[in-house]
Structure formats: structure tokens, C-alpha cells
Length: 381
Image (spheres, rainbow, N blue to C red):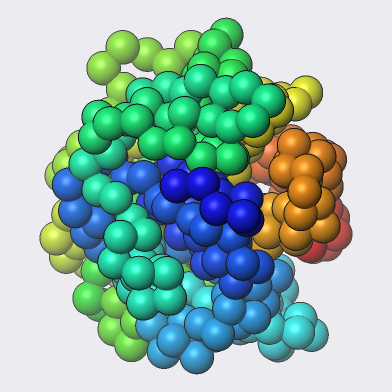
């Protein structure tokens, strides 16, 4: 695998890993992506790509494809449980950003990136059935151990998600932090609501929230959140993407009725509802070591609030390619530059998301407006 250019192995074929493969390839680096699954399938539900992330994908020549795959969100409406609008904030081009905010099915986005990687780098660029088990590194390279055999390269990038094997080896005493909030997700074919391009975030005064936004002409993605326990250690038997019934969700939202969006119909018409705990990890003082680094959820797992998780991984990918290109003969320094550029910015987002969760049920319209402006300032790349 050795060439005259720095060779790079990426653990994980998620949004961050695949975008990294594209940015690194565009910068001239030989890249291979290792994926644990037998086949990359369009799983999951919706995701918001914020304007700074859409800008990166546009630079990669994927802007038109992304716009075709999703919906350009023009505003976010903060509401109460009865649908009364407390505050509205423009998003994307409407909010004077240079790029739109695109809401899209996560699986559709992932397959779009996968197709681009295979087309530009080659069908061998993504190796499936290669779950990363660990690595050995020294001053001259990295040997990555996988279920499909060992892979040698100059650099290893751990983009293998919240339960990253690469992070676990770099930072073994690093527990998940549970918020005490359970989340349920789904997507329903219920047609458009309001303008057809609006995102809503509705709260009550008892730690419940409902987020909904269109990801297609008729498909609405929704996320329901309820604080059910005290924050702390993740309980035994916590569900991760386990299917649940509509009744299990709706019992947490009695009396919720927007009028312009029928919550009962939306949840009950969802083909598959999944539950998972809202978790993150404490920000790290450092991400990597030597020729090994982290990216995306492996580096900075955060609460899925503010639509920033996937977007931050895309920003990581651009920064990684730029800093390695700036140190063509010294990848260790390039990785150190990448970490220096991104670690503080992503720490701010992790902590901002925690602060946003703590403020549940306390927002006045004025407070919502200021919180939104403050969050935008801290998370805008």
C-alpha cells in the first residue's frame, strides 16, 4: 500500500469517513475505507446538513445531487405543544448563509457519498466486512487490525462512530455520558406541513420535545425526546435502534396538537420507529497520537441537537485534507495541525448542545431568539 504520497486508512464508511475519503482523494492522497458491515445499506432516517457542510459537499461537486436528494430548509419555528409559534429563525439562503441547509434521508446521503467514492477512487476504495479491532503504530506507519486481515498505511483515521474501536484504544477510560433522555425517530409519508420547507422544534415545560422537518415532497422526518431518568450512567438494557410501537412514544406526549401537523397521525403512520438513548462523551484534551487521529462522532460525539453532528464531521474532513496537504512530508505534524484546528471548535459544540438540553422548558420567545443567535455564533464554521 506504500506510495510516494501519504497513504491513509479510514475506519468507518459513515458520512464523515466517506467525505474524508473524497476530500483526501481530491488532495492527492491514496485512501482506503474499512467498513464493518457486509454491505453499506441506506439505513437511518433524516439528517440536517448545515450550510457550512453543504459548502464542503458543493466544493466536492456534490451540491446539485444533494439538493436533488433532499429539501432546502428555509426556517426553523420554535413552538409550544399546541403549535403556537414562539420564535422563527431563517435558515440557509433565507438566513443569508452562502449555501442552503439541506434536510435529507441519512441513508440516501450515505449512498450518494459511497457512489462518489467508488466512482472517483475505485470499487476497491471501500472494503466491507472489515471491522477495525485495533492498531499498532510507530514512527513510520500504522498497521490496522481488522476482521478481514491487517492493513498497512502511513495514517489511520478513526471515523468509526460513537463506539469507535480506534478511540477506545487511544482513550480506554472514556465512558458514555447519558443525558437521561430517550429519543425516538421515524419518517412518515404524511405530506407537507406549513410551507413544506420549515423545520419545527416544539417544547413543553416538562422536558419533552418534538422536532419535525421534511426530507422529501411528502416525507416528514420526526424526532421525539423525553427525559425519563436522571443523567448519569447508561442503564442496563438501554435500547439502541430497537423498534418500538407508536403507543410507547405517544404516551409521553398527551395533549400535543399543532393543528397544522397531526402528531398522532404522523407517529402512527410511521413504518418503523426506533429508540435510542441520548448520549455523548466528555470532550478530550487530545484526539490522536502520532499517525493516528479521530474524526466525526469518534472524535466528538455530541447530543443530536442543533443539527450539528453530521455537519461537523464534514467540516472535519475538509480540515483533515487541508492540514495534511500543508505538511506533505510530515503527516504527524499534519494530524497535529488538524487536531489543533478542530478540537476546540467541536468542544464548544458539544458543550453548547449540553447547555441547550439543560435549558428545556425555560425559554421565553426572547430567550429562544438569543439562544438561537448564540448557538449559531458558536457553531458556524
